[in-house]
Structures are given as structure tokens and as C-alpha cells.
Amino acid sequence: MTKYLLITRPNHDDTTFYLFEWAKRTITFAKQHDFTVFDLDGKKANRKTFDSYNAKNKVNLIIFNGHGDAVSVTGYNNETIVEVGVNEVALDGKIVYSISCGSAMELGPAALSNGAIAYLGYEDDFVFFIDNNRAATPLQDSLAAVFLNHSQTLTNTLIKGNSVGEAYDKAKEELRQTFQDSLTNDPSISRYLWWDYINFACHGDKAAKV
Amino acid sequence: MTDKVEKDKKELVIARLMVLPSNRKIAIGSHGAYTPKELIAHVEKSDAIGKKVVQIELAFINATIEGKIYDKVPPDNKT
Image 1 (cartoon, rainbow over the protein chains, first blue to last red):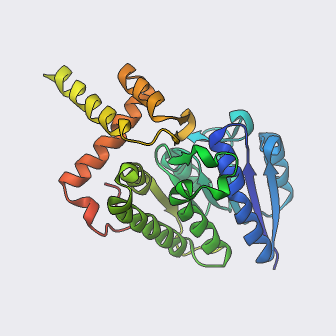
Image 2: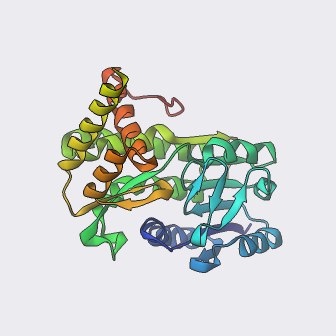
């Protein structure tokens, strides 16, 4: 049975450009695993396009890349795509992973109350480092990779058919181990890895699979 | 006393930021990506970004004092 991934990839600033590039790997991996991918890249990461693809297709997995806060996730130029009290019902029946700030705090639970299967994300600001010498080629940035690898592990594990709980536990453990290693290898980044680790959250049905 | 504590916190965070290589930037949520020098300015101003950086540092310090950073914390346990 065909599975559908809807992914937003704005690229209007340093942060979103990094996530934009990193998400290319997720898209490739999904296609290799027979997913049909709706890639809302750049300016296509807007509310209207999201609503259109989401309404016309039985999307199984949604990945939001971009900014956000406790109650919303945003797209290109920080246009709100999903917001508590407005359209969280758009996530009904989906497994959602939001690589953005804070939305797991309130949008996640609200989405679950409106039928979302599971919501993974961060309950406060997501932080990562950028090596300025690699800023034009994010996929070559091994410093950013330290912070972003766990998100790739999460999405890959979900795409391979593992449960939400398995994917989350694996990614969380990877992030924990990365943090532990940093205490010896690069303590200056440890506090920021710790922050991401404690705010990385999973709500909903952990037995669910895409 | 409170003012001194706040001042001490800022000084600690600034000291941490000063040892970061200048070729690094830190992307902090929706706020943007900043060099260590820019973050120091924000911490000194005690604006939203500066307060966030202090909050991040304090979370780490508290977890260190409580020994939590050395534990294998259950995945769902937010500390």
C-alpha cells in the first residue's frame, strides 16, 4: 500500500536553510522505501499549499521543518501553517514530527485531541550549532550534524516501518549518547545538546506505525 | 541579592560564550543564528535571546548538580 509523506522545507534564513538541506536526505530515504513524497520546498511551504496537499491525499506522515512556538508551526517567511485553535484538526489521522521550536508543548496535545495519532517534536526552542566555514554546504557541516543526526534517525526509523515509540526511543538515546560524548569531546556544546535532549518529546500512540 | 545573582548568572554565561570559536554560530529556535559575540551582547542586554541562553546554561548546571547528566534518563523523563 502506498504511503504518503508530506514535508515542509522553507529556506528563508540560516536556520531553515540548514533544515531544508538536511531534509533532502529524508526525502531520498522515503522514496527508497516506496513513499510518495509531497515536498513543500521553499515558498511552497505555505498554508494554502499545505492545506491543498493534505486535503487531497491520505497523508500518513507529516514532517514540519521550520520555525514555530508552543502553539504553531510555520513555513516560508514564518507564515503560520498549523495553529492551536485554528486548524489543528488538519493533523487528524497523521503521525507528525515537527523539527521546529516549542510546538510539542501545546500544538502536539491539541492535535492529539483532534485526532492526530502521534506528535513528536520539541517543547521549547530547538538549538543547533553552525560551522560558519560550512554554512553554504550544510550537509558538510559536521558540527551541525551532531545536533541534527537524531532527527534523521527518527524519520528513517519511522519510514522503515518501526513504531513511533521505537523511533523516538532510538533517536532520544542517540541524542543522549551524543550529549555524553560531548562532555569529553567538545564541552562547549554540551549544554545546548542537553537542552535539545530534555525538550525532545513524544505524544500520542507509541505503538502506531506509519 | 537578586541583582547580584542575576549578574553572576550573566557573567557565567558570557564566560562560556567567550571561549567558543568565532567561526561558530548558534541557531536558537525562531530567533535566528548568532555568533558568540552577538550572543554576549544579547546576554548583556537581558533581552529574550539573552534570557534564553541563560536559561539553557542554568538547565545544564542544575542537571549537573543533581547528577542527572550522568544517568541514562528514561526517554520520557524531562528534567
